[in-house]
Amino acid sequence: MNSATRTTLPTVLVVDDEVRSQEALRRTLEEDFTVFTAGSAEEATQVMRREFVEIVLCDQRMPGVSGVEFLGQVRLDWPDSVRIIISGYTDAEDIIAGINEAGIWQYLMKPWQPEQLLLILKRAAELYRLQQDNQRLSLELKDSPAALQRRVRAKRLEASARAGFERLARAPGSPVDAVCELAARFAPHELSILVTGESGTGKELLARAIHYASARGDQAFVVENCAALPDTLLESELFGHKRGAFTGAYEDRIGLFQQADGGTIFLDEIGETSAAFQVKLLRVLQDGEIRPLGSPRPLSVNVRAIAATNRDLEEDVRSGRFREDLYYRLAAVTLHLPALRERPPDIPPIAAGLLERGQTQLRRKVKGFTREAMECLCAYRWPGNVRELSNEILRMLALSDGEWLGAELLSPRVLFAAGEEAQERELSVLSGLDGGLKERMEQLEARVVKEALVRNRWNKTHAALELGLSRVGLRSKLLRYGLTKA
Image (cartoon, rainbow, N blue to C red; front, side):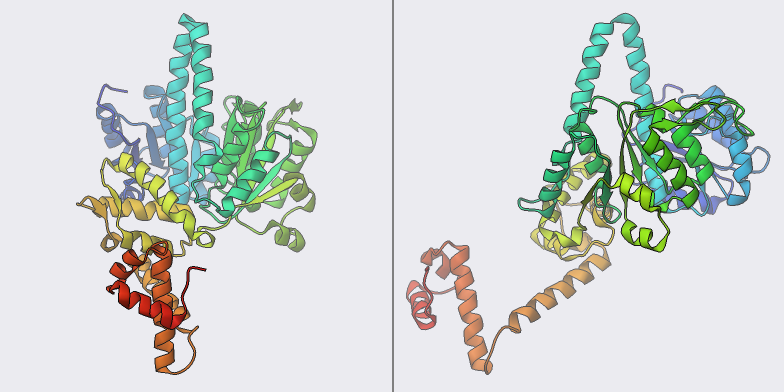
């Protein structure tokens, strides 16, 4: 790497000879990364020499030099950069053959999905940061083992504090409280846990909290998205392989189960795995042994498994899509995270936390949300849960040029949903009134007066001011409608 100044956001170089593909990738990534683009291996090399690049995202099929060949050269010249390749299904054999030669960290198949791409790139950025930390720690180890041990303990305590159950932001009395209470009780025990819930509800955050609350909290926490890789690569990723196990396996690879030995492995989207892979995973969980591809003997591992899914695995078991024995092996304890639409009171504290992180990410400073904006956020159903809410807040921040984030910055779909919700509330209020027009108006007036009194803790002076009445006028209505504090 050269000495170019490092930006706040992680840096990624997109290498693709098609301009439209470059722009599609840029639009997907630019909110979370500083994106550089290149149309050829030669142009990409110039960018690497000029800029500080942490992640290289390269297309396989390019004129002249293939993606694997280019990433192989990147591995020699810039070994710290995390290398990711994108290609079609027809190139799978070529990619598998070259994956070790080029030191490719991840293989993404076309057509890629924005959420999957962002998840992989964010993990790549975290991997790069961990690699740099490890290098610094290795240098410190040579000079001062005692100082390094103190720093490692401090880092683990810091990680534990960042990943506690409080990271799942929520309002007092939230249904998530009960989930976290159960999780905290199960965390110290060596039980496999299945976390269910829609995508974006915070299943990985809950798994991390469980890990750090357990006796394994000072050991590794390893994450794998089982939906992101085909079976062959997933097996190699989890169990590892020996040199020569298949074409292109030029060196041994340590699998994630072995990396997590003594700690916890989080298997996200476990419901997307194939029946063939489920058999292999069941054997590992039952026997506590892995057999790397091409190895003549198994290796013992001591790993706690936490799995997650957004599918109904019980229904998948009944339909034969998911193995019953694997389900019961994974689901000694099942914890369900409710969708965001099922807990509207949690939206304000979650939004506040997301806004704080978004201001750091986009280097913008605002005071907060206006009341109208927060009401709209609370009225929307958020099918994408916290992940969608995060994107909406980042969008508002990017558009804002004032001190407050107002409702006018919201996406049309959020504003439209808020309007519909308000209409439904109005109709629900009116539906409880009986009689003719005069009787209904009196019932509505009595309700408004009572709400004002409750809101002002039965301070009649304050309630009268809010309603635009004199104290005598308010007292008259209290007598008329029989309203008392009791």
